[in-house]
Image 1 (cartoon, rainbow over the protein chains, first blue to last red):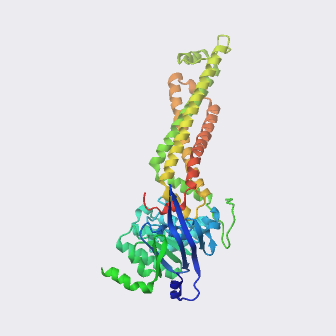
Image 2: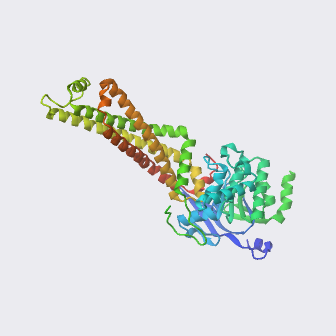
Image 3: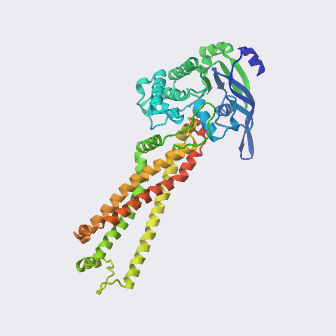
Length: 253
Length: 235
């Protein structure tokens, strides 16, 4: 861990998410499953981080921890220097509403709402007036390239378009972190690449931190850092510079 | 909306305005119109039954109170106790029979309403299970438990209100039709407007309230759902 951070060498990066010796054990009948066995991880403001690992490695568990969706058995998770375990239900909802934007593998748009309404729903929760949220929602939809589709319902949009709406929705309340869970998992190669580019674009233009759990090797080339999880621990953290060679090798196959 | 709770530094409250909640609930009903119709049909039938019994009682009561010999004859032909003897006073015996009849009706009505609540609860539970991912997503977007409860209760209440209104109309028109066949013009002549209006209002309140009660447990279950559910890729 400390070595990687030493290599990183960039001066005074602000930490947006920090985990400290995080352990998670699930009780399955008689057996205790150790999904995480002590993970220390820092995510810096404005970086694009991918978490990779085979299924069963604890990748999803770590991802849920970092997103404030799950609480550790031992250890601490800090989001924006706030200990998640100390938050009550109301504060957690507040955190999810304003600090974190979620993107899901299966898009998860609310089917009864139009694209614009999906994007503005988090703004409604955050107390924006309908005029404010409509203007902001239209801006966001234009940013993801769907300005003319604002009145379409999710089922009238393609998978890639739905995921674009989801990206716009994740950005609704100017979050500090976007959590993307296999965002390209249900998309074909080309649309997947488009979504990755879009995320990278948002990451660079608005400085939002992107944390993404993925199997998708296309993701590697845009990531600032890639964290490999194996058997409930961090196996390796690699910087993009170190990755370039590997990626070209994979693509060359 | 008085959403109580503390504010974190630098932020406003988390809210779901009532008008927006109503809008979302109505849309959810509209998009699942077929399903809603099936759920609602339970309410419609129960309330139609309730209303037909009540309006029938009101009409017969009104006719009986007229105590005209030709009407009494018609009533007796239909097997109804006029409860009035030659001297114009109701006999003990027939009063007892009327009371017995009424308690039987009350029993039937309560049974049908009970079945109706169970039906609503069942349908709403299914609807909650079906929408696990949607609810989880809303929670990820910052919805509080109370928002989810609000949405489900509103949905059921709106559904119940609509169903009850239809049920009242069906029950009333059915009874009117039958009464017209049996008693002809007398029904209109001695139409008990006030009692029927009153029972319609009661039925409306009962139907809506039952829909609300039936949705309570499902709404609670929905609200207790973890946001992680939204992450599940399957289903």
